Amino acid sequence: MIEENTPVGVPLGKPLEEAAVQAFAAEFRGALVRPGDEAYDAERAVFNAMIDRHPALIARCTGVADVIAAVNFAREEGLVVAVRGGGHSVPGYAVCEGGIVIDLSPMKGIWVDPEARTARAQAGVTWGEFDRETQTFGLATTGGRVTHTGIAGLTLGSGSGWLERKLGLTCDNLLSAEVVTAGGEFLKASESENEDLFWGLRGGGGNFGIVTSFEYQLHPIGPILLGGMLLYPATRAKELLRFWRDYMETAPDELNVTPAFITAPPAPFVPEHLKGQPAVGLIVCYAGPVEEGEGWVRPLKEFDPPDVDLVQPMPYTVVQTLLDPGNPPGRNNYWKAENLDGLSDEAIDTIVAYTARVSSPFTQVVIQPMGRAVGRVGEDETALGGRDASHAVHAISMWEDPAESETHVAWTREFMEAMELFAIPGISLNFTSDQSEGKVKASFGPEKHERLVALKDKYDPTNLFRLNQNIKPSRKQPQPVS
Ligand SMILES: Cc1cc2nc3c(=O)[nH]c(=O)nc-3n(C[C@H](O)[C@H](O)[C@H](O)COP(=O)(O)OP(=O)(O)OC[C@H]3O[C@@H](n4cnc5c(N)ncnc54)[C@H](O)[C@@H]3O)c2cc1C
Image 1 (tube, rainbow, N blue to C red):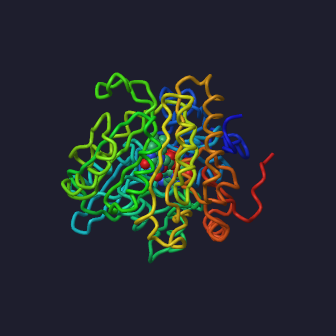
Image 2 (image 1 turned 90 degrees about the vertical axis):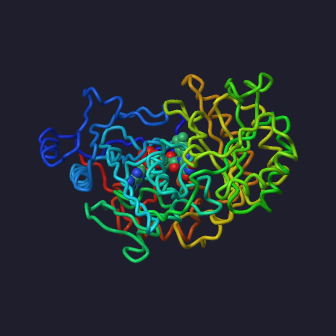
Image 3 (image 1 turned 90 degrees about the horizontal axis):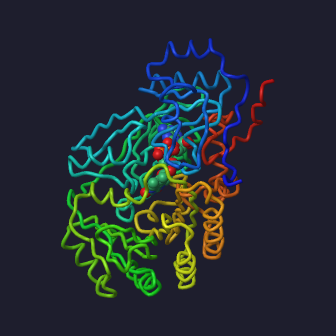
């Protein structure tokens, strides 16, 4: 069994009745996709190829009215509900076995207000689409590092990106959200309306309703920034990472340098001696003037001149594509993450030792420098836990052959068990396949978890929205109807 406590969605209640589907279809404007339809297999596929589920119905929503109709239909018919934004959830929460997928991906509206420096975007938008619109005005907010990730799941689960040390997480830049609750009610949530819900949406995931649009604070960024990668053989990683760790303490908030252990690809920019070899890349993004960034990157290059230097001025929209080639949809994925309180020499040695015997050439291990603007938001200001972490380690295991799954899952678990020695509670649930109740609770801490349970009781007391990092309501669950 590979999936850990992943709720595959055992259908609750009676099977889908044709008359009910037809009545629903009459009030639904978007497409309804069902088993046997030509589009069915393409529409049920998600980013992670390990996830192969067969919903009874996929409701491709065109707007708020469709979302309300779909929520009411699902509730009345007693269906398992999966909510789909960009379809990138690694545990595969965007699709269920039986039940209904409420698919928001056709909802692509983006409205930028350049003067107020805000943007409202519908829940089907991806980061590539969002950045394109906001960068037209030289604006951005912290967003996902892969262009095809959805803004929706990412924002609700925290939202970590290259700009976070300067601008905070994506959820810290959320100004308001429009939400359809489990009861089919349409609400606005912000610092001044339904404040409790707004608090829970920032890190509490998709537990409290379906967000139909997000309003973000934007900031002047670029359009040209210093970005790219410095690449070294992994044999030099220990000394390099010790220097990087200490150097980042002194570097300004604008500088994000993120080490990623990879297997060097057979790409033209990689010298022959590195191709196919374990390597460590320092991925650079300087969210300020290019010359200033060059000054801050220079000491890294002088400490250990890289074998490949791809750091150069480039559009922010290009920085946002740097990880796309290594993260294509359709591979098998198993991810784990831990937050660290300081990156000790021993923690570095453990990362270096495990990455040296990584089981798949597609796997990446990323050490995220945290703190700065992320840590300046108070622990109680949003639902998200773990703001005191200095670093996060992400083990992003990827492979192509499904027959190899046991091997790669075992490597990931073994590595991250070794990292637990250095870990502190509280992780971004966006980055893990492990969604056990204990992990979810620990990620928020007991007090915040209790507050989230109270929110769940208020907005989704029957746990209609439970294919997520689930916060269970305190009331009794509905029983299957015989
Ligand atoms: C290649 C890749 C790169 C990534 N990079 C980053 C990164 O840089 N930073 C980061 O923080 N995370 C990153 N992630 C993790 C990512 O944030 C989560 O996987 C997130 O769930 C993706 O959002 P989505 O809308 O694409 O997901 P989906 O799979 O569509 O949705 C996941 C779940 O989120 C909830 N949800 C989605 N939309 C809504 C909605 N409108 N209303 C209510 N609930 C909703 C539901 O529970 C849903 O099942 C990455 C993931 C991948 C696969």
